[in-house]
Image (cartoon, rainbow, N blue to C red; front, side, top):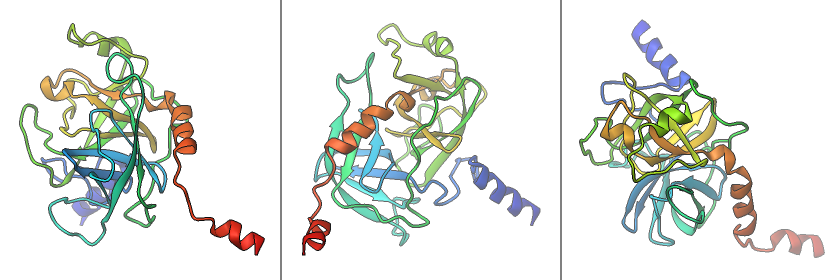
Length: 254
């Protein structure tokens, strides 16, 4: 009984690995989205009933990629899923290092919020070095080893200082103010999956950019620093919002 209570406590705290494979407590990340089809298999974070955020490298395709919400085991039907087509894909420009890696995705129909599907708040502040954050995605947590997506995985990582991260960059990569790094030696620092979601203090703080921690576990992994993109995200939601039927207008004028 004590062991069971410990597992429940870990899940509520956000750490929630159930075994050596670092499997998340099922449905403990109701904002996590599995994007698949149209040549992609990656993650995103639901921020609104119409919108989710992912990385540039995820690259979903309108009306070819499916956003699956309420997922844990993507290989079976759990009865909690909502499968919705991707309608609009807006990438931040200019793309990639040393500039930006961020993509907004609008769903073809709104998500239905319930205990398995909930949005994650946008950041109210930026993450600080030493802060503990939680990363989730589908794929292996073992460096340099491929594993097809099945169960949602969770790892716990510390935010590291920008200079510490810069010192690990190969010569062909350049630092950007749009980057934040997390993970270090002797921590769980690898999770293979495009668009991994990083949450700190209950706020969305990153989507994965570069997998450095899976190549060398001593190196931090690079995430898009979402706290500096709040205005851009809100602008995209305003400009590219869905065209809704004029039901309210009709009722008001009739």
